[in-house]
Each structure stands twice: as structure tokens, then as C-alpha cells.
Length: 258
Image (cartoon, rainbow, N blue to C red; front, side, top):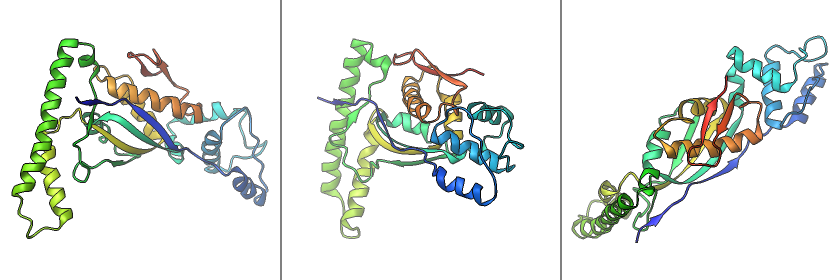
């Protein structure tokens, strides 16, 4: 009996801003930051970064915009480099290796650390069921048989290759790497994996734009939805031109509104 995995995304690092230190800097330079409207710590960091470029602090130098409006103006003007100061780190589990093959194509502004099939024994691997398969009982039964066959072959491969493997010229670590590298060739793209992802706000916005509403990729849309729910809570002004449609359903998608 194969094990079926479910998607989970945990945020293990959020943006932070030591506003007291920044205000000390302003005081030393005889400047005052007039903060307008309610804003989160992350949003204040973006505003502070943008204002520093022009030293636009104080009644004479600040526009009447509040923080939310100030950030939207930056985005509209294309001055999104200041968004890169905000970073989140996510622990993502219950996703397929097919999904992560697509995810890691996003390079600029992203960093990844993924479970290695070379060093981790996948004999007890879990698997991610595509929604199109899950919704078709006949296809699902056939899918499970294929997955079970692949997993059994993986286990047999570990045993058989290990029995014939020449160990004279390799360390134990190198032998295990070679053994699992050969055996993993049979594992399907549906094999569950775990990955830690760090991304900045600008990169996440681009990810939502490219992937958040992509048709025919349910797994990508579900990950996009969960990430949006996390980052939008921390910095809603940064993502104010995006929204979720059909939230918490199989048809959920992230839409850019303007």
C-alpha cells in the first residue's frame, strides 16, 4: 500500500525591520519620518528604503500619500528593487518532484534547499496524486498499481545493485550515493519531496503573475494560494494588486487585478 502525501507550507522566516535603529539614524541627521496610515513592519521597511533614495523625510519632503499608496506608486512606477529587502523562507512538503522541477526554474530572487534522493533512502517514500487522477476512480486504481510497481522495483534495485557493487575503490558514503543514484532512476515524478524556499517580495510577485493562475497545473496554483495567504498577511500593501479567486477550492487562483 503506497502512502499518499498532502501539501503543507510552513513559513519559517518572516521579514523584519528594526525601526528603532532606523529612527535613530534619522534623528542623527535631523530628519523626521511622518508615517501615515496603518502599516506592517514589512511595509514600513519598503517605505523607508524607498524614501532613503531621495532622503524624502519630513513635512516639506513627503507627499501626502500614506504607506499603502506610497508602495503602490513605487510598483506602478516600476521601482520594485526596494521590494527585494523583504524575504520569506518557506518549508514546503507534500509536493511532487514534478512540481519542484518547475519551481526551481524561478532563479532570480529565489534560493532552494531540497531533499536529496542520492543521500535519502526513498524506500518509504510518499506520493502526490494529481487531481485529475484522484477524481477518476478507475484511473486512480491504475495509477496506484504503477506507483507500487515503481517503488518495489526501487527497493529491489537497492538490494541487487548493492549485492554486485564493487566496493574496493569507494567509501561507504560514495557507495550509497552510487546505489541510490542508480535506483532513483525508476522513481516517478509523483514522488513526494521536501524543499526550503527563500524568496524576496519582488520575486514572489513575479511568481504569482507567471504561475498563480496557470491553467492545467493544479499543484502550482495550490502552492501559490498558500504562499499568497502567508505573504499577504505580513505585507498586504506589497500584494494589493493581486487577489485570490475561489479561495480554498480546487479552482483557486491568484489574479493580478491591475
